[in-house]
Image 1 (cartoon, one colour):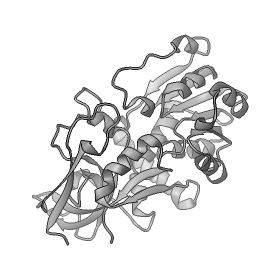
Image 2 (spheres, helix red, strand yellow):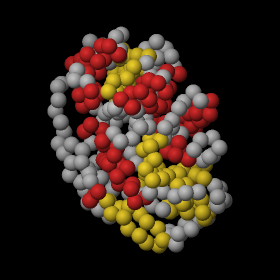
Image 3 (cartoon, rainbow, N blue to C red):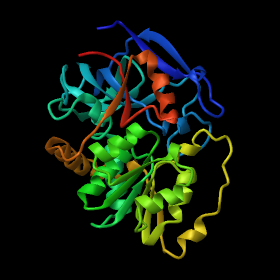
Image 4 (tube, one colour):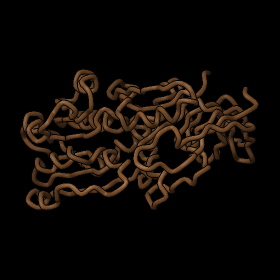
Length: 337
């Protein structure tokens, strides 16, 4: 076990798209847990698009980091020292921790992990926050019915890939937007999407939707925003529902982009548009985890993680989210068993 601890901090607030200068790796002493806390050796850490918002000095649904603060997010790891009766050394847990070799977590704020159910990275993806976001965002906000058409942007990402599969389990026709032929093939050949569109190879998204969703769109799960969303809004059916989960196309914009005014297109179909934050469903996390876990165990829900090895490469893994490097969930492998 290392006596020191490497930890990434926010070195500066980026303007536009971040780069490696936005991060600094510092080395110090391994932290010590206090009463009720766990010292966790981080095995994998999560990088997620929402973290870009925390790098701004602006109000958001997630509190911004200050320059010099540790980078934080979901981690999964092994307890190496416990000051809580709830967990023992050797247990595996997941919770919110630092981009670091070791992280001190409050024992009351972690969840146990069973490596026999799924590999550890899955607890940062399909069995973690992204999976729960997909579950509640689709089923509660999207409220799909069998036979309806569900369109998902960012469909090959951690959230979108789960959304599409849950929609298929609910008897829907599913269409996904993704950014490469490899991702399109994964969606249709492996995950069972009925159609997928490589948005980087298509000039006319509306025409592509005419082919992929000839009966229009009943539920749109939006992870991206931008021109894809503009096109989908023109295809909404009567009583369509739009779940706004993310807008990664705009996360690096320094000013709010003004595109075509799309609200009038909601009038005729009487469409409903609702944003969602996973924290609103905290009291129901156990329900989602149980269903997601059962689907994974039965093979009804497939998952994939793109693992970037080495804590030193965490910033590169994060920046790769904005160029679409990942298929499924992007995680960083920090340590070996």
